[in-house]
Length: 273
Image 1 (tube, rainbow, N blue to C red):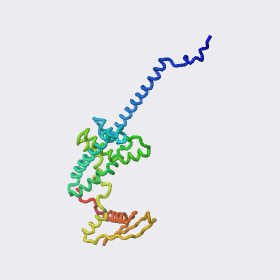
Image 2: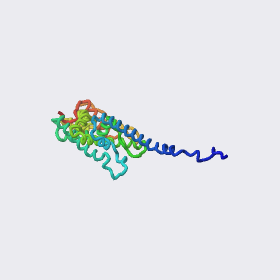
Image 3: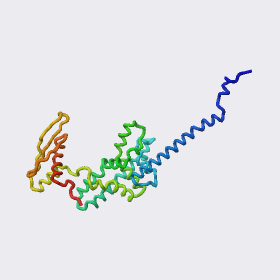
Image 4: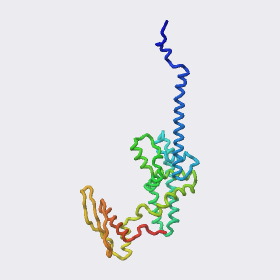
C-alpha cells in the first residue's frame, strides 16, 4: 500500500483556498484607498476650519495645495496651485488696496503704494500661511524629508495666494475679502517692518526743524576682517546722540537713526488717517 503522506498533490492548496487568497489582495487595497480618502477628507475639513471657509468644490482646495512636483506628468502643470496663485495674488492686491484706501484717508498715493507693497509681499503671505498652520497640507512629489520641508517653506507664500484664489472662485469676492480682512487687518494697522529708511526719516525730521543734516560717526569697529561689527553714533544739533550697531556701517547707521527716532517719538509711517 502506498503511503500518501509524502504525496505533493495532497499538500497543494485546494481550489477554493487559492481563490480566497487571491481575492484578499484587492479587498485590502480597496480598504487602504478608502482609509486614505477618509483621512484626506478629515485633513481637508481641518484646513477649512483654519482658513474659515467651507468649500462647495473640494477640488479647488486640493489644487491650491498641490505643488507641481506632485503631478504625474509635468505637462499637466495646470493641475498645480500655480494658476490659483496668479489669481489670488491679484485678488489679494485688490482687497488690501481697498482696505488701505478706507483705513488711511489722509495718506497720499505714494504712502498707500508703500504700504500695499509691504502687505502683499511673499514674506507676509508666508507668515499668514504659517500662522494658519498650512505648511503640512502642501502636497509634494517624491523628495527627501529634509528637502520636502525646505520646499514647503519656500512655497508657503505661493500657497497662501493660491488659497485666496480658490476661495474667490468657490465663494466669490465677499468670501475672499472676508479671508483677507481677517488675516491682514492687524498687519495693516501695525506694519511688520518700517515703511521708510530711518536715515531718511531722521533727516527730513531734522530739516523740518531747521536743523543741520544728522552726522554719523564710527565709534567702534570689532570682529575679524571678513565679519566686522560696527558701532555708529548719530548726532543731531540740540539733541543727545544715539547709537546703533550692525554688521556693516550702513546697517549700524540705520540702527542709530532708528534709535533716535524711537527715543524722540518721530513718526516713520507717513500720513495716517
